[in-house]
Image 1 (cartoon, rainbow, N blue to C red):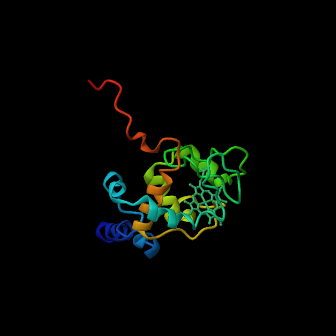
Image 2 (image 1 turned 60 degrees about the vertical axis):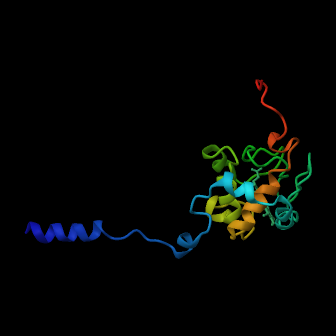
Image 3 (image 1 turned 180 degrees about the horizontal axis):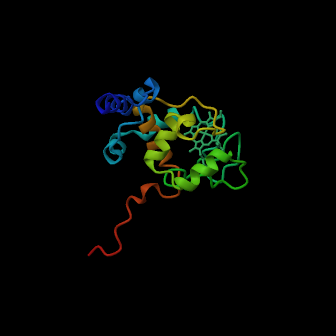
Length: 158
Ligand code: HEC
């Protein structure tokens, strides 16, 4: 009879999606207001967090490839663009979908490299703490020729 059949279908259709507790508890998931967060973050404390990256990454201008690619200018930079670095297929594919290291993309990758780019060669557990990651990104953002372009007046200013 129709009602029985319909009930069975409803039951399967209403089966709740599997929520891994890991995904649910992942700190990177809720959106961070980056402008506000970075305004309040101290890049110098982020420098301490960045010491966890330097075993594998150079943070110097024109840095060489190490276990990982150099990270100078990485904030807002292109994904997978270090010259001659043997990126994983996973990261190359990620670069097609997500070509720029936006705050959000970088934050998600640093929080959980393997979840954000499954199969990445970056064998690093991740920085789960939001505040540490925000400070770290505030510091990484200073690693460029002219930090945030501050001090330069808009060209058409009267
Ligand atoms: C154990 C070594 C290791 C550590 C520690 C490590 N990384 Fe990596 N990282 C890698 C490797 C290897 C890759 C290349 C990933 C690939 O090709 O899949 C990578 C790639 C990256 C990329 C992508 C770069 C690009 O050119 O697109 C970013 C961004 C990054 N790492 C940031 C960090 C930050 C920030 C830290 C510190 C919090 C860190 N990594 C710590 C090994 C490491």
